[in-house]
Length: 113
Image 1 (spheres, helix red, strand yellow):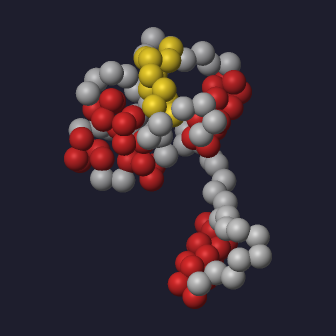
Image 2: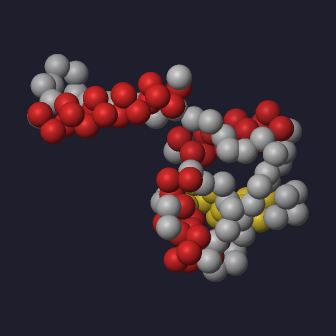
Image 3: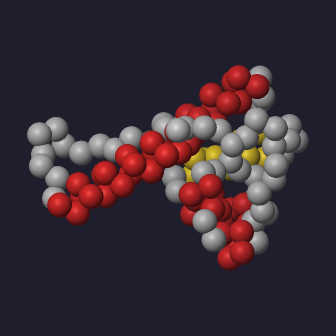
């Protein structure tokens, strides 16, 4: 992959921080072609042949069929990352938001068990 041109999320995004940490750990220096602010823009750029990228599997949902991108198996990937549920301190969640929060937490417990 050392000769490939990379299309990555912008500095400061969670995805980019995880990728940078992975590259540093692996002592890998990518050839950065583009930094983009959305997964959709990255998917379109990759489909257009501008380079390769590392994106969340969530960002690829349905894209492999729709846009002709493919997932390459790479040792050390996928990169594990954490998701956080955030809302204003002291705010009482609406009933539906509370149910959604509980479903997320229940799912996370099953995955981490």
